[in-house]
Image (cartoon, rainbow, N blue to C red; front, side, top):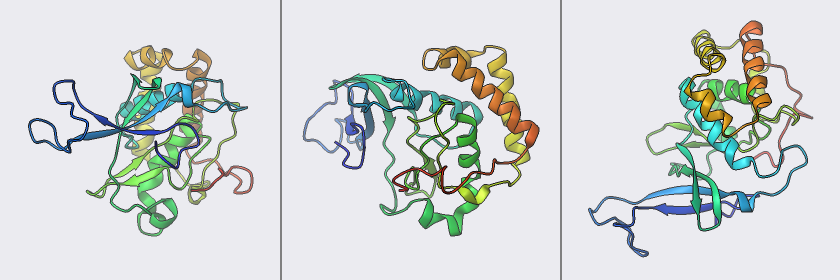
Length: 232
C-alpha cells in the first residue's frame, strides 16, 4: 500500500499470467517488470463535495481528456478489477528525485507547468498539490492525482498561483478549440467520457473551455481560499 495516500492507494506489479512470479524482478524474457498505481473504489473515502464512488472514474476521465489534448502528460490510466475490486490503474512513474515537487521545481521549470495549470482550469481540479507532479529519470514532467476533478460544486484548489491572470498560450487554445469541437460532435472521447462522468459534468467542461477561449487568460484565484491541504 502506498503510504502517502488518503484513500487506499496500492503500488502493484503488472504482468500477464504466463510471466507471473511472486518474487522475480524480471519477467521470463528478462525484461524489467512494470508497476502501476491501483486506487480501488472500495478504498475511496466519502467526501462532502464529490459523489461517492466516482474518484477512480475521474482519474480515467482526466487521462482521456489529456490524451486528446496532448497535454499535460498524465500516465496511462485504465479501469481494472484488482485484489480490492474495481478501481483505477495508472502506470507507475519512477521519479528521478523523491523530494521533487512544484515548489522545488518552479524556479527553474515554471514554464513547463503552464499546460498543467491550464488543464486544471478545464477539468476544475480541486486538489492540485505541490506533490501531484513527477519528474522521471529522462526529465519528463508528469501530472498525477486527478480523482477530484470535473465536479463544478467543488472549490478549485491549487498551489500554482504564479499564473494568475496570465495569458494562455495560443497553441494550447487552438488545441482546446479542437477538444470542444470533438465533444460537441459526440466523437469517441464523448462516448467514453459518458461512461465515467455525468452528462452535466461534460457539458460544464465544454462551457469552461469556451470561457477559457473567450477570456484567454488564467483565472485569478485566492491563495487563502483556493489552496489544497496539505499543500504537498
